[in-house]
Image (cartoon, rainbow, N blue to C red; front, side, top):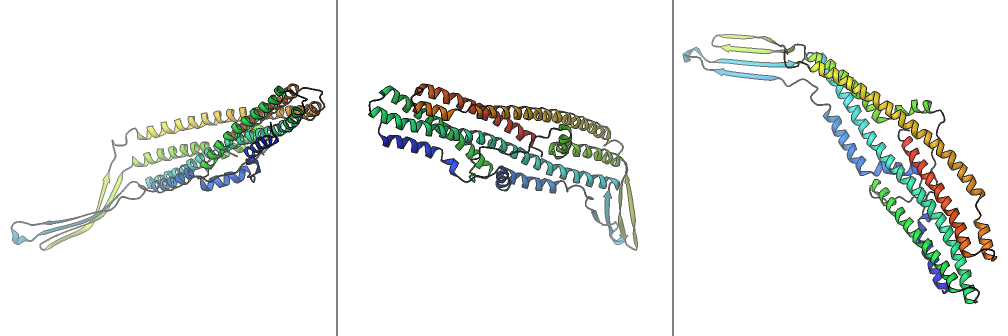
Length: 395
């Protein structure tokens, strides 16, 4: 193999690992960009604003009613009769207080639904970043491995030209470099896919992300204290609390709707030589139309309370399991990383190969063991980062 071909292979490996040359962007920067550019959040923002306006309808008095009658009296010489009336009907006054209260609570829920959608978007982005960090870290170690094999290949080509080794040894080095090249290319395809997915969350704008480490706040060892604060930021839980308040307001509203409806107005009646004017009052008794409605609203409140209680219980258990998983993984990762650092003999392997103490096969096996261990460590890191992303959804 000619040196020019070796340089071409190394150049391809360098180009394939070129994403690492782009400027780095932190996770917080990315989330801020996505909050501004995400098309789904923009659409949901408009939908939420529309819902907030909708909740302010049907809470006011109905429109007034006016009647005018022109009646011809027989015999005609008696003159026509003219009637005019204006009336305003309204429910018992407390009903409007509770309708307004329900409207405000529903608006709070609409905002919480939007925030919950934003939390979900951020969570999915954090999962993408966790996978990208894993792949970027693999890209770095694969590039280091390819550089090492590339140097060995150059030496092997010189030895082959000098007749010191056979074609089989040279081809073994070539095939290993090609294998690494294919692995790096496959890894970069995955990176490109995730970067495109990340751009989709960012309104189509590309986001360069080459970090190999995600910085999260360490898990608080006092879980219950942490959970007491975290549950306050859980938008789904807040929505359920508001739903209970809505139900309680509806119970009071249904009681108000069982009270008499009132009607007041003015009426004028004019005939030939006579005119009558005065106030009119009316009363409507809802004896049957609201039957069982208060009981239904009370039952709904009880159901909402049970749902909220169950959700709080499930949320606590889920967060506790994630909390314990993260602490356990972090301990395993720290131990694994320390052991891997002590057992890193890649430099010794290269010196031994160069000095003729070991064969290329022995070198590749030894390097492969380190690489497999490094990949395992990164898989553990990715699993921890994904768990942290779930744990920090409401922080």
